[in-house]
Length: 335
Image 1 (cartoon, one colour):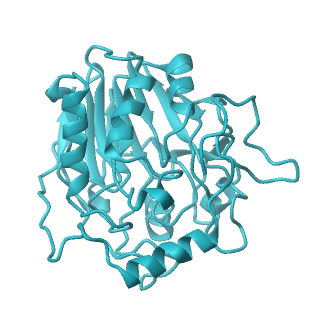
Image 2 (cartoon, rainbow, N blue to C red; image 1 turned 135 degrees about the vertical axis):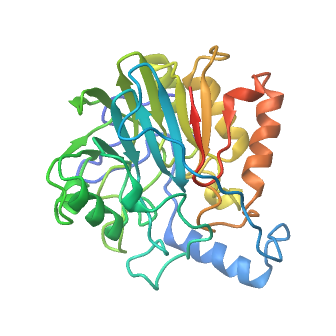
């Protein structure tokens, strides 16, 4: 599963008979790779996994109600890849999951390690929801239904093939984007961006729906929500076409073991590397917000390791310490 070529022609991620692929990989991960990982974990538990639970810090959210001032932008981390972004008067929610487990049923799937940073009922009016792909830890049945009912006017923007899943859960307005497609939604411009990942909610729909990140232009503000991704040349292409960004919401967790996770999940060092590419080097004032860690224990690294490694890589990159935001669950930062 190595990177095969530095760039890919348009629609190279589309399979001729339908479905999608990763244009920078020589082969996709397979179910037998997953079985090998699980068997190895049972036979020889990861040496760095914590032996006792780690209590992660929490904070009281400090976003504006109902909306932020026109010239301000804030980020509140609810958990995993769920962020509340207030870009001026527009309230944006990403990959909402409040459930206790990331799976098809409440008792099936990885259990939540850290409670949400705030109750779902405490959300301000939501204008835009960005939904990157169909995996259970990103498209959560209960959360989608509750948000659709409480915020019926919200515009959901998602990847190709995912909108029917949202409409079946009560979403009234859902738009699918291919990579590089753009739409005006909730008063901002949203562009679908490449990601290196995969899709599927059952053994029978693997790679049938697309996975994406999203770039948002909201007046003078620019936000990049990476979604789920391994490291790929797509980051540099996003930087060339759309960067730099005021704020990049970047995954930093779920990366061990690397032989299995590298194609689909970046580690903290690659997250910092990718940040530099999407922001064309040392873009002054550009902020990286770490996400996709500390909420569900999905992989083998210690639950509190990603922030420490991200800070180490960030320091080594020569960037200002204040431009790396590692938020506690519920924490809010303003820019």
